[in-house]
Length: 175
Image: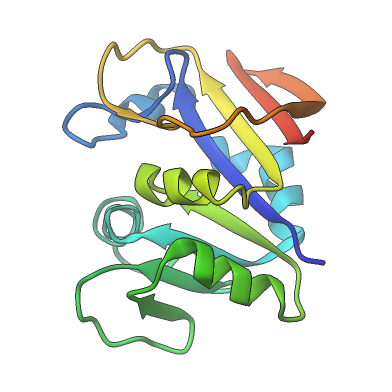
């Protein structure tokens, strides 16, 4: 069965973006995506899910010249009407229903890349199997929180921790 994995960076105080939605504060700590665990993680997945804001940030700021996830099937959840391509599918679908359908298909694990609204809905549906969080040693004080309010308590089991360049990676499975 395919696992649904949240792989994301957050500030020490739990934000994935500043109050303007920016992620420039991540740049101070080098390229998180160039560490060994990220490379190993990419070998385990073949599908990525993100919201439109995350997609737009990648496509216009982080990698405007080429889609960095060309080797993955990308699903962008959006209310915008945008034509899909063979590798990027724009869908107006409930994240839980999308994930439920994808987990029934053959393939590797599924990466939940962001944003907070997608994570909130998947958390409410109790659909995230693994939490792979890089904690950046920055306190933003305000911004877009990674986790919203839950209607239930979710226990997690620590799988491993690792630190490099001041960043602490924490990996949990659902308990």
